[in-house]
Length: 109
Image (cartoon, rainbow, N blue to C red; front, side, top):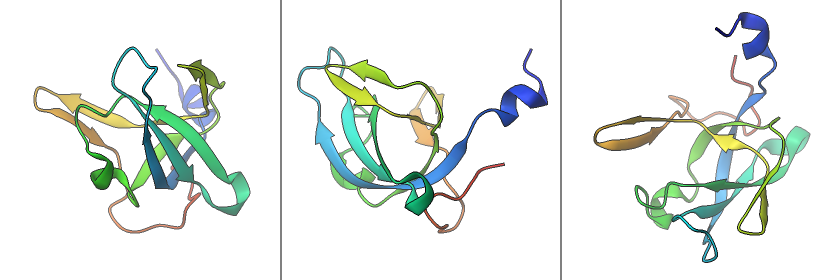
């Protein structure tokens, strides 16, 4: 079971998706997302397996919550530097997003 110290090690930030690209070499349908986390963290590339649920136009300029201190992972030759948080049920997935517009880089606590 996780404790509060485990949770506190995660750096979860709000960022804005500024670019969405297909990843043709991937085994599963994924997007390469460019996400702006503000001046402290900067711009990151995060790969997300959400192509079956969202079109590019639905993602562009959207704010999302992401874990930004995970070890990088290379998928289809592209380094992913974080993970978007989402919930899933029988109808699909939904991003965990702020209820109002926040500054990019805002910390989730």
